[in-house]
Length: 335
Image 1 (tube, helix red, strand yellow):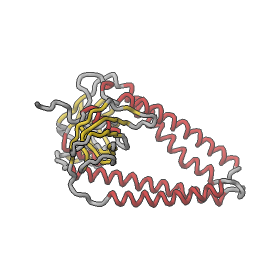
Image 2 (tube, one colour):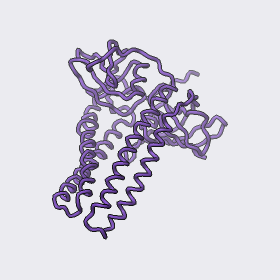
Image 3 (cartoon, one colour):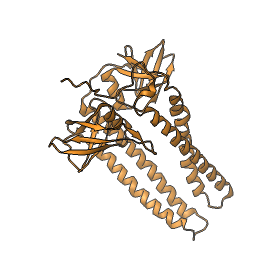
Image 4 (cartoon, one colour):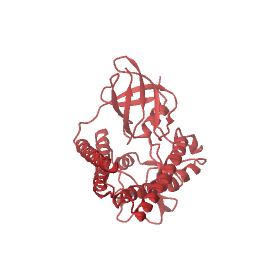
């Protein structure tokens, strides 16, 4: 009998976007979490400004608070005000399929697609750009868009002209190995950024330990301990990033069928799904997916399929994804 189940999660056609699995709970949780973080970070930044004015804790402590709390508040505030909140307000409308991408052009990470007499300009990381070049379709909802298999909406812009310096965005097939390699390089970049931020924390903590007026304060040894811990963490993050840049062989996928309930969104905005599957050796085990990529769990719940890199083993964590799509994440098999 022919298997008629969907092979990848895509927006529903002709019905409101809120019917897309997990989308609304994810947006609602993002609104709450990002808004809370933005407000809390704003208060911390205000505290830093006050301490800088009073001078009671020297200069390093308020600078530390301002350096990290101010951009954090602005970033998460932008996510809420310009991202998840307006997207949530549009979920009563249907997604629109843009197929073929005739006349599309690209300049670096920006892809410009002719749409309704204008240009829809979207910035995409390398894995999603490679997926789009191969599949030639995306779904739009107002200024937002998603690619097949991806649950997290991204924001684009409507402009009168394409991005400056654009050249034709040609169709180009992408192998699973290349797509995984691009994903690993993107992940390595995030690790390097994390290492840089952690190193800045270490240096500021070291400055705090020498700058505090009260040398008997518990903050002095605490700051030194934080500086050492962050210095070691920065080294670990940088090494992990370098390891991710190593070349890898062409991956082999093992497809499993999963019986699960619907995907859910937890307090931290992580999309998870649990179910049961049968491993290639015939053993029935539980499986849980939920990690850095919320699209993985959403795809498993929507399609009943799970593709694992290599051969899965009971009681182990495996790397999984959706072949041909920029969706990757960990899954844990029960023993």
